[in-house]
Image (cartoon, rainbow over all chains, first blue to last red):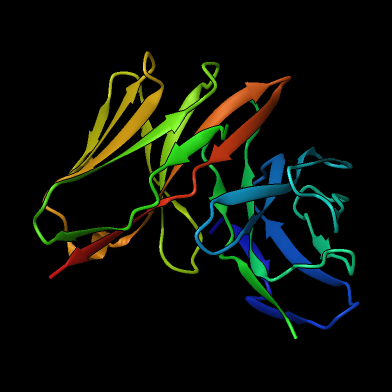
Length: 113
Length: 112
């Protein structure tokens, strides 16, 4: 079955450590997104990519980095510069060129030790 | 001003009740609209797209009012399983990129 897979489901980060969240999709979607969700808040866009080898900053990109070397993969690195990384991270994808719905991964809960 | 605003609730309603949520958007260029459902610590899932003519899916009815720039979701005969957070999502296509804006969500609890 086609879908979007995030891993790990839970991740713990030590102070000063970089961690990478994985996002893979086999839906042949061009566009992929990373969102952050804090309790009681909506989803905020971190980075998005409309096409391979290209990505754009979202509203809260500071302290994060991404790559898009393959169409299927859009990993997110939470760097040590992100001082408040504890949140629920959601990856999503959609086909480009239309008003298509988002397909979400099941999310990664990141916590700081 | 936020692109999309929702009343966060919580809305606590008894089983069988009818409940309605509104969501306002600020950009008149908004082009497509959605309601997503999110259970606690799960991914959001598409509940309904919202069309200009309004649309219904079983107990759920979505409406769009472009003049007043709001969308609504009506749930009839509430079930315990309807308890969730409902997210309003607006798409504003700008410079060829799809831009999706999420509301903060409205929390619904259906009480036995």
